[in-house]
Image (tube, rainbow, N blue to C red):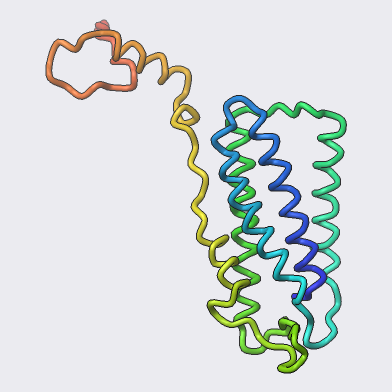
Length: 201
């Protein structure tokens, strides 16, 4: 893991979460997910600020594959928003996007934190005073705390409506509209019809 790739991925994900936050606030039905994107955008911003002093102890080659992947992703989203300013996604699509963003940022933070805390890590923090020299990132370091916060963010929860099919919704409406005749637990599925099956002769 090298500093150039780390900075590029963090910068890309910060920009994407910022765009998604802005779009979700403008999309009816997706407003609740805006807070999900905002949390990640804020923490990624903190991480990005700490990366200004991150350096390689020994020269490392860039992870070209990861860099190109982030460039393609950012370019594709920017092009999509340019051609379709009023991007319309269904509730399920917004949920998928929020979940995917959670998984990507969580994996990113987990990988970075593990690498920074590794005894033989090549990533170091530059000494601003120029008196101590390059130092490792230890636990409770501001960068480590921000990465831990990002790892521990919960998975976005889906609205209850996304788990209910139209048939189940209709059955629930019927169940609630009809007063039950006995003490029983309401059934979200339609009751089986009492049909008489003729016997074979």
